[in-house]
Amino acid sequence: MRFEELLEQVGGFGPFQLCNVALLALPRVLLPMHFLLPVFLAAIPAHRCALPGAPANFSHQDAWLEAHLPREPDGTLSSCLYFTHSQALPNTTFWGADQSPGQLEGEPSTAPCPQGWDYDRSEFSSTIATEVWETPSAAGGLCEFPGARPGVCSLGELHHVRHHPHPHWHSSGWLHHHRDATGWVPESARWLLTQGRVEEAHRYLLRCARLNGQLVGEDGLSREALNKVATRERVVQRPSYLDLFRTPRLRYISLCCMVMWFGVNFSYYGLSLDLSGLGLNVYQTQLLFGAVEVPSKLLVYLLVRHVGRRLTQAGMLLGTALALGTSLLVPSEMGAWSIALAVIGKGFSEGAFTTAYLFTSELYPTVLRQTGMGLTSLVGRLGGSLAPLAALLDGVWLPLPKLAYGGIALLAACTALLLPETRQAQLPETIQDVERSAPSSLQEEEMPMKQVQD
Image 1 (cartoon, helix red, strand yellow):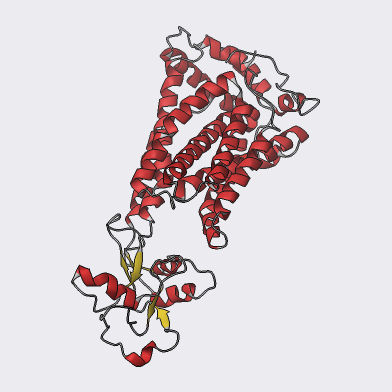
Image 2 (image 1 turned 120 degrees about the horizontal axis):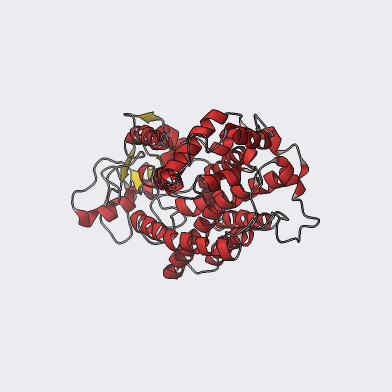
């Protein structure tokens, strides 16, 4: 007897499974919000050196700043340096208190901000960056490095925190509620059988039958039948990450999935966290990015059923790469096109993220499915962690971050095409099932397993 036959006895996919899906979906809905909180909490507003003596009259402030702050190569006022002696401006009679004609000769001298920074609070009332004790000496050191960009000096502000940031409390509270929500989800009966825990699997199957409206008595699912299924299922009693690389086919699948997941997360978080250059504030951008995920998920639902998992995965990653590449060709004055391409790219990257979970879970056998998903998710989180760092590459060359995101997405798309299609294929249960499914050539479209309906 196979496990699928046991599921038919307890009602197949019914209310019991729907309840579990709902319980698992709730924390999954909250999880992206938790990951994207740094967009708002760790934002670094526009800032400049805090200098005494700023005029209260707004009509004089621009001239006063021009006299006290140097300009960056891009024309913006420096956020790291100030003139040690205020400068006289052409066609003006505005002079700083410490200005003298003799100081106009030669190149004006500059120094790091001596008293911290003044932040623009028009968009954010406060963030982690504005709620810390500034350390001008550390920031000044950063500003002295060649190629330092405007705003880089604000990294020095994170050395001495006044108080514990609120995000830490929110994080622990969210994790507490997340744990409470998933405590209601029962163990997988199939997994319990693979571990030899027949009695627990029996209780869960009886509960499943009761909620699904199937009249199954205590002896309806005999222990003898369950023991036979457990013997069949229990091939790897204690799976480890090494089991993902012991056999040729699993090793091939694992390596391809690792590359694919790295590319999916790297491009997704690169697009989600790098909000510069769109001409919108962070709230409008996140609203657009969040709205596009709804049609993206609906499109994925249709494509995986009718086109297949592999082509959907590769197509979504390719779409992400093309959107990023095209955005590099759009002139800066065409702001609407830049916004549209960013939103389209976010939609494709979300589709790739959604497909990756389904596709990867169907590639691994039941006995290693959780282990395989854990490994690929770990590699994916590594890509997500490196994505914000890649954004700093614009200090080397402005288009470099988008080239990195798009190039990695293109590599992941090509890697996804090397994986076998799993649409309408029965899920592998053992390592032997995966090894027997190895096609004779990479061009083969379907896994040669018993075909079933979606």
